[in-house]
Amino acid sequence: MLHRPSHRVARSFTRFTVGSAVATAASQLAFLLLFGILGASAAVSGAVAFAVGAVPNFVISRCWTWQRTGRVGVRSELVPYLAVITVNGLLATGGAVGIDRLLGSTITDHAARTVVLATAFGAGYVLLFVLKFALLDRLVFAAPAAAEADSAKDTPARRTERSRHQVPTSTRA
Image 1: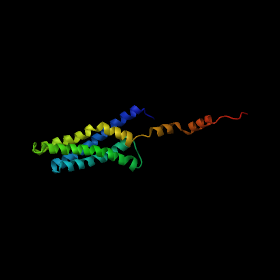
Image 2 (image 1 turned 180 degrees about the vertical axis):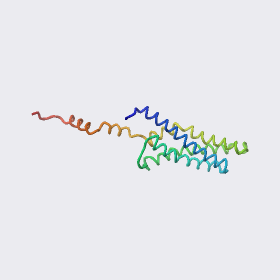
Image 3 (image 1 turned 120 degrees about the vertical axis):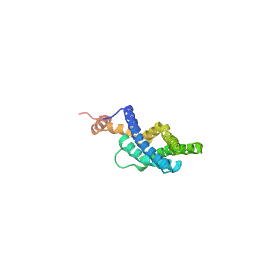
Image 4 (image 1 turned 30 degrees about the vertical axis):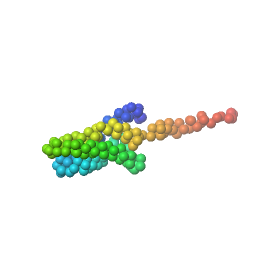
């Protein structure tokens, strides 16, 4: 069953939101564990948290949100996906590191500092959420609309009908 484009985008956006929530929870948990409990730097915590969230985000996005099956296209899916999310991850991590540096010794309580930095890290993802969806939907997991439309039109019966009507009748019995 073919869905209207607006329904497809709404369904994809809803699924993307759920998948992103799962990935964000994994990232935030990793950030809190690394920075808050293990005492890693904001940069290391952000980088590892980014990687922890990227894996489930890719799997959920590809398989559930955009209904892709089969082998992963390295050049067509994986590399563009990594480019989109890496920019997002760098901005989120950079924001947390920047806030950490700005705070300096202002907040000495480690728990409070952890909450502030985890919030800054998460905010980096929230701010770019819609842009990330649009890039993934249009560039990475874009449905080849023209190819789908042509394949729907080009059923064997349709191809025969079209070619029969394109050939002029030159002889009559």
